[in-house]
Structure formats: structure tokens, C-alpha cells
Image (cartoon, rainbow, N blue to C red; front, side, top):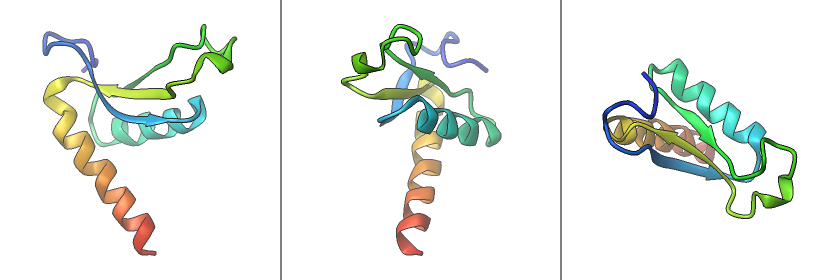
Length: 81
């Protein structure tokens, strides 16, 4: 499933500071069956200074709650240990 299916516009579930961090989150969400992707405004990586608003990780609106829950669980585990 792609984040742009007939479910309406994609929903941002995370905004991070780099493409690498976004790639890790996208991979994590995909490994849990969600259709995540990254969205950037940096000319395909050629102009990283244009990432002033960060790199967004987006999913279909119907998957947003599941994605946020998974990311919250990871955040909770990392801050507990």
C-alpha cells in the first residue's frame, strides 16, 4: 500500500532532521506492514539546506494511528532504557 492511495492526502507522522533518519523510520514502519515514505523539499537531496522544515515521514490517513502508536512505543522504550 502506498501513502497516496484513495485514502486522501498522506499524513505526516514524524518530522526529522535528516534523510537518513527518515529512511530508518520508513523502513521500521514498512517492516510493520505500513505504506510509509519520506517527503522532502530539498531538490532530491541536492540542496540539503532547503530542509528547513525537516524531512517528513508520511503514511496513508488510514494508517496514521497505527504508525503513531508504533513510533510512540519505540520512543517509550528508548527513553526507559
